Amino acid sequence: MISLARVLSAEAVKLRRTLAFWMVFIAPLVVVLLNVAMLAQRSQMFARSKEDPWALLARSVFILWGFIMLPLFVTLESALLAGLEHGERQWQNLLALPVPRWTVFLTKLIVLGALIVAAHAVLFVGTIAGGLVAGALAPALRLAWPVSWWRVLDVTVWTMAASPLIVVVHHWVSLRWKSFTAALGFGICAVAGGFLITQSNSWWYWYPWSWPVRAAMEHASPIVLIAAAMALVAAIASCCDLSRREVM
Image (tube, rainbow, N blue to C red):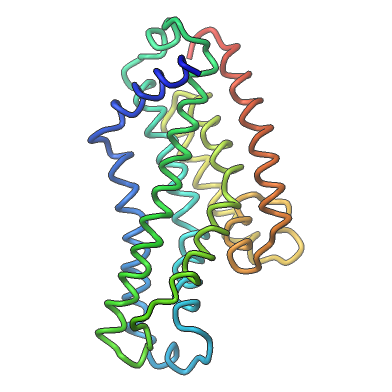
């Protein structure tokens, strides 16, 4: 545990002032701004709904986030974290440190997971702030104080809880291959597949990139449990695979 803490501390220092850090704020806020813009155009249709307006807003934000931005965000973050070592050929120095090899790869995964959690926290706060701004500009939206924050939190937690498997998979791909293009290409293909498969009621169960959206929309608790279990197995397998490689 001491070795893991040391490597984790070093990884946190390297992360400062990098694009990977700033994307935690940029990606969620872009999604919020897009949804606020759409609300401004569809305010009458939104206002006619009898459902809780905060629930509608949260669902709108997180469907866009889960469909497109989340898998692209995970792809970019994992590639950027791996690029800190791939780009400057630091793997030989890093793996020569007097710590078990698996701690290096596990640390990368922990940092990536922390970035994903932080992005969801930003999206949660941004959704509420964006809703209040939209409500002030268009009172007919009924997005006013008091805020139904538990509605937004509910969707946030379900989306995040269904995503660990895709985080582990992208982490492994980005570290296994040095090419930044390979990691991005894999992520783009996954997004394209998810955009189609998520809309299928019969196939989405088998496609992990569909799970965050479906879990948020349907509270699919079995998917959350499966995602957690498979992510644990995949994390152990990926660390073992990467640790056996002589040169990264």
